[in-house]
Each structure stands twice: as structure tokens, then as C-alpha cells.
Image (tube, rainbow, N blue to C red; front, side, top):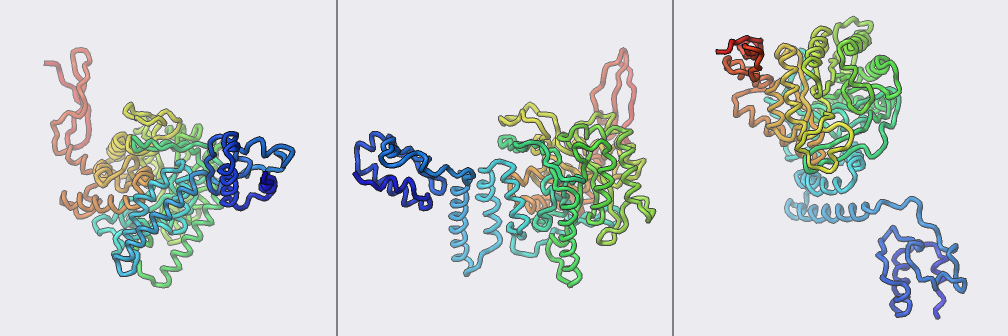
Length: 537
């Protein structure tokens, strides 16, 4: 009998290939051992330890060795999917790069890299669990590994897509931004703006770091093109986000001072900051005031988030009394010694910072009226409509449809668009700028929200399913739709759906409701909606 099995058991398990070869040789040399060992185990490279191989009991007898001589398994083995994931990625990247080199005189073109990110790259990311995939995407963007130019040409949006708000305080190169929640900790601002986004909203940021809700807390509803999350304001905290934003603005302003050409969208895009409250805070106003105080100097605009469904009690701040008190507390902080009625006057670019409020789509008509009235009375600068919904449309097909949390993506589209429509009407048909969010997956979806009353739009779930190239596609489609309808700029199309309705004054906008011998109905008269009475004939 060959007596090298005990040595293999005692030796450190460094050389997986040699050990596997040794064990296969042992089995092939003895039919009796093959019968005792049974079917050969499937040994995976980089994950196999000797203790995981079902060695015949013969080799663990006292004659040769003992089970105690077998090293314990690695307590932190690498995830099983990573070797296959990265091997596949490397093979695809290598093949396409070689083809690209041969076809382009030895140069790798930007479209090839973008295609990799949009197609095999997204497939590989979706093979991971949603939160891990999201973390990898943020890491790649933070390292600027995602190409910033889709066409290889000058990377600017057409002039028709430029949006100017608040007396030119904020000039957005295009109306498409990324919603808060994608880059919660301000780790990838530059990389995201480089995709062609007109603006990036970081956060929500809480004053103190907190972990948020237990994992798993993010779910893909692939059949529905949707996402459910219950993160619960996981945040690195104000101090960490402030430091990252300081670094970002120092680099950007230094580049401006050096007189570099602003030919890329990333140098023109704006940065919004979304602030929230810690879960254990009893006085919410204090957390929002602290976040505004620390982060306003590094924001092109500020957002107070009172509509996340994943923090207990947060949505109660949308009630009229609490809503008004919170806005007034934040405005007092923003005015500061300068006495400005609106906005923080000394951000890093010397501009005031507009204040917006983010609201939920799950509001009653009375709640919408209260929020609109307070918004106009207090003089805030705008609304973000809307956050995720806690409702579940009956059309959902995914097995994750019953998960607790906020639903975003395609199923939210109609509800969010209607909520934009309602707030545009309730705030005086354009007196208050609105950023429309929810279910945007195409240029037509964005255009529908603009025509409903949104001056800007934000995406999130679309990036999960379609990758970074979708941003450019939406902007191209938007420009085409504007040209088709004869608009020369985005602002001309804002609220167009309301103007079309006003041109048809005799169309009944709600069904008549029987009330005794009379009917109650609502008509669009061209000057707004009014209640009329019609006698039953």
C-alpha cells in the first residue's frame, strides 16, 4: 500500500491542483477505493479544502492519520459566484477588446466599452443579489471605470434640453437626473455626472451614521421591471458625506480656475443633497436643521425628505401642522445672518441654495391640498414628486411582490405621473417647479411627466435594468419629441397636458355623481376646475 495519503492530509492545503490530481490518482489506481469513496466529488478551484473531500474512512484510520490532522475549512471562503463571474467578464472583455482593436487601427473605442457596461456587464451584475450589485456599481462609478462618453464625440446635450430654474440660480444641462437613494453616501458624484446626467441627488443623509434596516432589504421584481427596497435611511452620516462633497467641489473648482474647457456634461451637471432624520431621533426638526447647516454650502439645491416609507413615523411629517413647522425651522437655518428670504447665500459657488420637499405618491386629495397650500405659503422653491409607493398594483407578477418596503419602477409610472399632474394644478399651474420621479424608462415616460407639469425628472430603477447608456438614450428621445411637437426648449413643454385640456372647455373631467334629483360634476372651463350643478332632465 502506498503510504503518502497521511502526508497529504498533514500538508497545508496550498496547491489545489496538485491535491486534486493526487486524490484522482488514488481513486483511479484502486477499484476497491472507488467503490468505498462513491462518486467523485465536484471539486471547485479556490474553494476546496481537504476536509470537504469525502475521503474513504480507510484514510482516516489510526493506521495512517486522524481526522484531527485535517485542517479546518476556511471560515471565510470567497463567494461561489465570484470566480465564474470574473472569469466570464474577463473572457467577454478580452474578446470584444481584441475585435475592437483589430477593427479600429489598434484603438479601443468608447462605444465598445459602453456596450460592455450596458449588456454583458448588466447581466453579470444581475447575477448577484441586488444590494451587492448596487455596491459594485457605485464602486465602479466612484473609480470612473464606467465610460463617460457614449459616442466618442463632444459629450453635450442639445441646447433644447437645457433647463434654467429659480432666476438662473440653477442651470441644468438637461432635465434628466438620478434620484436620491442611488448614491446615498456621495461616493460616485463625478462618475454619475459623467454618464450624461443633468444632475445627481445624493442621500438621504442622516446626521449620525446608521445601518438602516436588516438585510435583505432590496429586491428586484424582474418580471415587472420594478424594485422594492426597505433600506431605512442607511447612511454614512453628515460628516462623511460632507468630506466627500468638499473633495468633489475642490477638484471641480480647481479645474474651472485652470481654465479647462467645459465640454463634458460632468463639468456642467448639478449636485443636490437630500437630508433625512435618524431613526431614533424624537425631534425631527433638529436632525433636518443640522443636515441643512452642514451640507448646504456643498449643494446646488437641498431636499427635505419626509416621504420615505421605511422610517417609522416619517410620513406623518407630511401632515399640515408638522409639515409647516418643519419647513419654517429649516428656512430659519437657511436665512442665517444674511437675511435672505429663500436659500443659503454662500455655497461654494456663491449662489443661494433652493429648498425642495420630497413627497409621497400615496396621498389623499385633502393631503395634497394641504401640502400645496403650505408650500405656497412658506415660499419653498419646489417639490419632488414622488417617493416610492407602499401600494401593490394587482398586475405585479414577481414572487417578491409581497415584500415590505417602497415600490419603484414601471408599476409606479401612472401613479407618479398623476401625482405630478395634481400638484402642478394645486400649486397654481407652474408657480412651483416640480421634479417628477417614478417609473421613467424611456424618453416618452419623461416627456409625459414634463407635460404633466414637471420641469425636471429623475431616474433610478431604469439604471438597474438598462445600465448607464439609457441616460443618453432618454435625452436623445426627449430632444426628438420636442422637435416633433414644435418646442424649442423643455420649458415650453412643461404643463402642456393642462393647456390641452383648457382648450377643450366642455369635456367633463369626472363622472357625474347622482345626488338625489341632481347631479354633481366637475368641468374644465379653461380657467381651472370648478364644481357645477346640473338638474336631471
